[in-house]
Length: 264
Image (tube, rainbow, N blue to C red; front, top):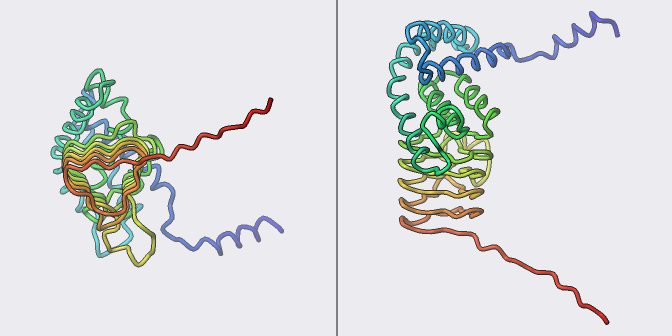
């Protein structure tokens, strides 16, 4: 098969006219600039806000496919939310500093904690998700997922002072609701009971009330599942129905010890 024939056949099968992978790298660049703008003490705010607006215009060119939804108007509303987002993230960082005995300084939390980084990118992406800006919020959280192992869908609703310890393997679904002062450890899943495309507009993921702690590798499933306030979910627990406030839920392993008969 000659080269031109191969090119012709490849073009024939390229059906997705909006699939431009420059959007992925441009989103990652935008995400990095956002993080530095909010947290780096030496970053000039005037210069960075101008840079962010220029980067956002690139994202609009690549990702705003519907002519009746002028995405460029989103920027002014979004940038006005950055002080509020930073205020929320400062509370998240303080929650981590206060919860984790291994944390030595607030600076360490901002620079070295994967859980905090994942929360930061979630909060920055969530506001774009709320504006209905296509694809970019998901690319932002997938960028954080790739770096931290924490998968938070930008549609989730998360309250103040959220702490993720260690982080690796945490999954938080699109319709999950997490209220204030919640602590989550590695491997926790807040997921759906089952997956079907017709559930797209339905709440599929659990609600976690105030002051709940969920320990490592616990799985909590279902849109009608509510974990009441002040509850502790122990490690490896499997929860598919609501839990009253002030409860403790734990998994009891069955241990079998294999014995061998000795013959003299």
